[in-house]
Image: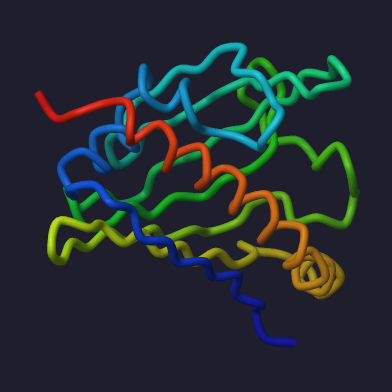
Length: 166
């Protein structure tokens, strides 16, 4: 089985400099990142190749969920490549709390482009060093991931309307 690829593209009525800023700074990520209905608990961001974004969110049920991005490549205002995974409070990679068959890590590439004052963000994710079962399960999750990331990007869109580039 070839690696399944999850993709999602969204355009925002905001300049690239602003979208990049709120995507790459912890104080902004805290305002919009995560599934709709989840509350930000904490996060640490070291936004550079070799750096990490390690965060905790609280589900509406009260359950806390940790995650992390390990940054591999950052081209300012153009591209971010990272692996993401679920983690524990110490930052160790752990299995997804909802399914043991979800890949331990997902390799992501997020690209940014601007035209006419609007910014387009394109996401591409694929299982990283995953088993055949994990790749198949990842593909089966596309509808749920589409719903989740759409909600997250809705929050980004709403947040962009409240901030400006200094």
